[in-house]
Length: 320
Image (cartoon, rainbow, N blue to C red; front, side, top):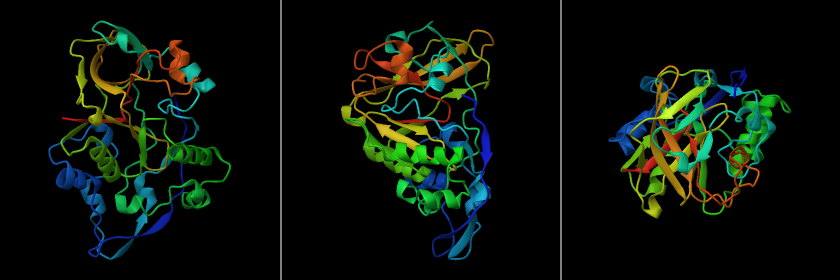
């Protein structure tokens, strides 16, 4: 879906940092503290500032200028098609009528063709904030007025609806068997994923595209499809979907009925190569009966395993 961009007015916020005034960059937490042997996927590196960006502070308190974050939001409030509880909107049904976002697991085989397009989906400029900064910003429906004020968003505007929609989705109780958390920093994502997988011996991956394009074309599954992760029920993958928000926020969740596949694709027209990640759900009985997947595939909840391609700016975590 094509989103319009809205540039939020800069705000200044007082952030109390460590005694030496330094803020630990998110990538250093990943590489030095928790996951030294785990490469970062593009979905993560694309949302990071350079390491030195956060290491200039010298005082015990410093002003952090939000304009540095590249804060923008999409101007179309929509429920995520990757949330199990929501019914499809007319916009989603129209957009997905010719695009194979969802498909059946039985169609995951060499030579199968899909109509797809792989565009750069994170076009709002949002970046990860260090945990110290993110934790100092309210993220609650009870603090909505405060949040809108901090980002200079007018109450009742499309942008305010986007912020409200994201926070409500994050606060909504998960379906039966789903463990979920909206993470407001990379450090929180790492902590959630490793805690649910039971160790730091994990891998994080995302879909990678050779050439991004707005053109819809036919893609064929090439040789090399493989299942990823551990078959242990307690080590099912953690999937993190990026949300519409002024800075990087991800909806991360884990269920016992999720499988993840690496699926190589090739464009029939231009030969574009895609290292696609596919997530399959073997039990959809708790999903909204009007979910986009059921309406597009013409199936009933809980009857067949349903899969979807993961957009480039979403992340899957699994045990090595």
